[in-house]
Length: 91
Image 1 (spheres, rainbow, N blue to C red):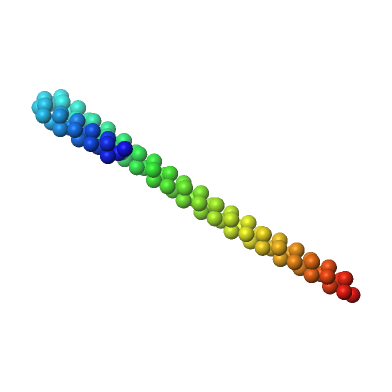
Image 2 (cartoon, rainbow, N blue to C red; image 1 turned 90 degrees about the vertical axis):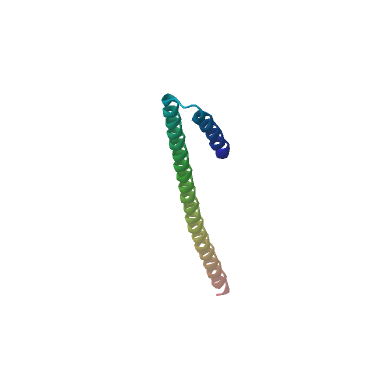
């Protein structure tokens, strides 16, 4: 999509360059500046999205690790309790 926009802008710039009036040249410069600013803003937004995604993934992994640890502790406690019950039955 970005390639299409750049190509369209280039075609527009070439057709404007063929016209030589100062007003047209000023409009071309202004249009180029607007396009550049839009691209920079879009790039920054994409980067923010990537950062947010990475933070969410890291948080998800930390939550997974915590739940795994809690599950392991629960399983260990249940095993120990079961062993104690078996030992008490032997006596």
